[in-house]
Length: 479
Ligand code: C2O
Ligand code: CU
Ligand code: CU
Image 1 (cartoon, helix red, strand yellow):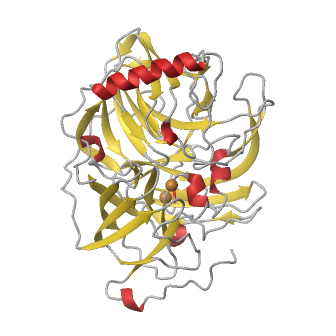
Image 2: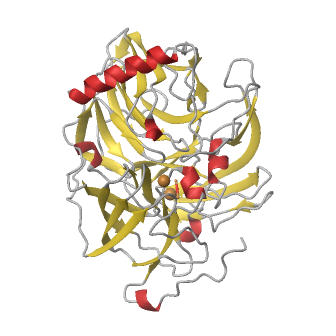
Image 3: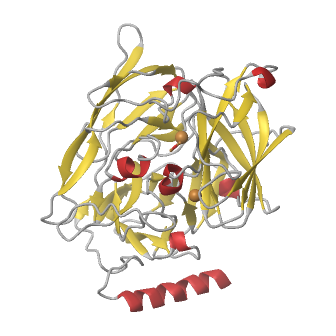
């Protein structure tokens, strides 16, 4: 209650102070919601004769008109900005052909996917200009909203910022009555901030503690968007695809909505909230109820960290005069076992842009982990706001400074916000793809921090071989 009043007041003052100036403090009241929300096309290929589902992805340069009358040079996947939504089912064999036409070396990482390290698309899987990378794996994890983006060491911020990213939806056989018609009542919301120069180019000034904190927002690459609601309930799959900004999502009328899934899959039951904090790389699926004919604004509310100041209008939702009835929200979404708390505890101290006092070294293995291990990872943030992502793993948040997290943060995740000066304990479950010579990454997903070396590497090994595993990679360093 007190916090709500405080937020409302700061919002009011920010609004007053900012009238007509549109600085880094938000965009409230500056939009007209003129553009229909773009829905990224679904790339859902039929399986070939061998049963393998093949996806062709071209990373390329393009141009986009975000601001009226201004042409912005951008990058995209199979298009000018962002990429198609990929979709696969648990058990599918998928094969990617990723061709790099952007003119500089890059990679494509499958964030949230459980797969062998050589297929992961991290900094070791460089695709040279003109080259094609062809990873292949079998999808074996619960239904979730995952995403893909470049991960070249040192230039991830630029490559993601220019527009290389997309969603990768995973389905499974677990039946749950949630809205599921893509583009109708199952809607992706890729939220990103941008800063534009006078002539409409993307400002790439990545200075400051957090790098770029834009003053304009795009949703699915749409500036100034609205969405036409046609059903009484809509599921939104929200991805914070920003370089650094953290959003406190909510509606202008403060309506309650339900979180049904976090990064790695469904929650046990829908969690009611009226604000939802989402940091870069995190995903939440939410279900929102609508009345016929109403209009409501999805907003980002200001918070108290430097990284989330600002009051943003994000998307106007316009409900049709008649809405098709949706199913009731289920009481139970999935049976979720309590987190398995392993005996091994590792501590990761988050410094300015380092972890445990060290910056990323592509030739150094920081942690060696037995296949299938359950461990407790303690994310000990001794500085300012960061977040923490682990590749090929799924975790549950045990506690934050000793306190149990709110209900919507108790589900399966792969990325978590780490407020300044807090200790976040995670119960982590690691994968089974053994490869002592090819690491996975863990890192802060604030991309400037990641690029500056706030990242470490771990390998998954046969249990019992931890101590005999080399800690140096001789092939690394000349990628
Ligand atoms: Cu979304 Cu290592 O990244
Ligand atoms: Cu990742
Ligand atoms: Cu950070």
